[in-house]
Image (cartoon, rainbow, N blue to C red):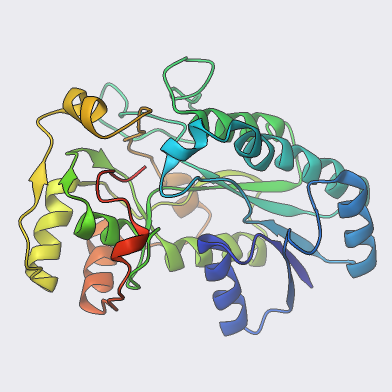
Length: 302
């Protein structure tokens, strides 16, 4: 039995769907029903259910994007920095292994040689480097709370996307934002991400941090060209001149644009498709929905 925290969110829903597809026994715990940020409440919950594993897909991302975290710092701090520590305390007391959905947004750019950041590289987009959004800062603190744990996985997600039109989907955002920012990024196909996370537990790979991104990286312009080729949208795509113009006109806080190295994931026998393959697969099977009112057209992906 697996306990899933945050199963009603964008990432949590993907975990639910994949575990149902694999006939994995799990129970989804909603914070509206059980306040699992409370140590005593979480302890009793785990004692009652007696799971073999726990997945934390809960967190605070802000809506419609990370700018909202600047106005709701208390909930952002609780969801991203405090909660992982609470879960660790309880799981270690009860000897329950678990996995935590983290973020690659604790980095910016790439290494001087152009390669991606690996799991041993310290975050360079966090409170310690004093250059980040509040969201990225809290995600980095969350990882620090788990840094010396020997019984959990830290799964880093980076700009999720798939074939289903959604306010959280990177492709949907590019389709609907009035103006885009050119950047190079690692990205994560949502179902590929969830599958890799579950394989970590199923294959009993060593605990620790894993960058779970599709192999390679991609520029905003390249994704737009793929969108044009497959979806033929009836619109023009405009870009900000540079990041300075973006910050002046559209954003309240800096964004993380970065490249991550996923070779550690590959080294433990977990395969994941390339960025190009995952994008092509998503666009070929694109499922449009009427979501225009749910995305702020002035903003750009976090």
